[in-house]
Length: 290
Image 1 (cartoon, helix red, strand yellow):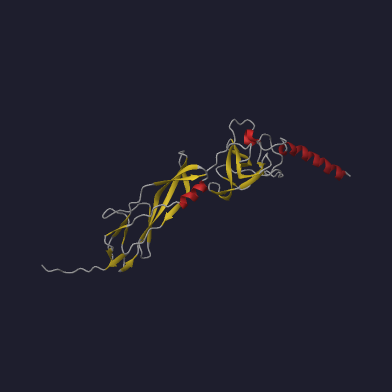
Image 2: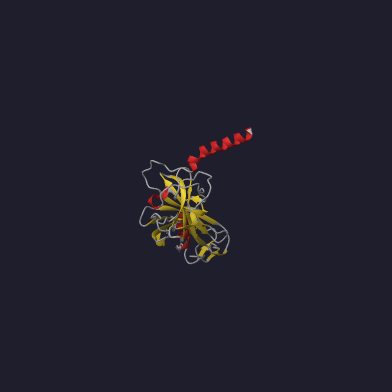
């Protein structure tokens, strides 16, 4: 009998202790969406996946209900800034989101709408997540172009291979002779694409050069080489024969959305060059009579 009373008293104590945190507001969906969906949440599931451009969330195990909004901690009560929304990733890291996590919800008209899970960020802190769709009453949220989307576009665009110049010219050089390699591909290039209906400008800059000499040796530099006698990419072949030298160019990039600030692209892209034919010959000194 005492054990039963103690257990009952413990249940009441736990209910009093945790009820305000889990059921602080009743009815409706998260107040994090502002006027679109007023009210609080009632024991909804915690955020999953990876948040892009927002701080990591704190685990808060509550029971799932509507599957629309999840609470992480509590909303700052005195915040003057409206909440912002950041896509949650189902594939990708914190800074590179290749696939935002999809979601679905039933709108006030009874129709099912699909959308994307978004973290609710207030004063720089993640306070929950919400499914944002095209359903009536949803907040007006501009689609977010993530770095992962830009990386995908950056890698799908065509960037030029570097044209390789070799001295001495004419497709011939000599054994144990200084052979100079260089390219004039040094300036940034830009291309514009449309992502989520927004104009994204991508700028690619040659940042690294890998010189394949065709004899099994390579060099990697951040300079484009230069002609004789000032060039800094020089190679000597040790035996005669044929070689197929080539030049690979690694691009780094940055992007801007709708003419806004520039952001670095968190990836690089290497464009291989076309091999050239080079004959390596032996040169013997010959006495010439006068």
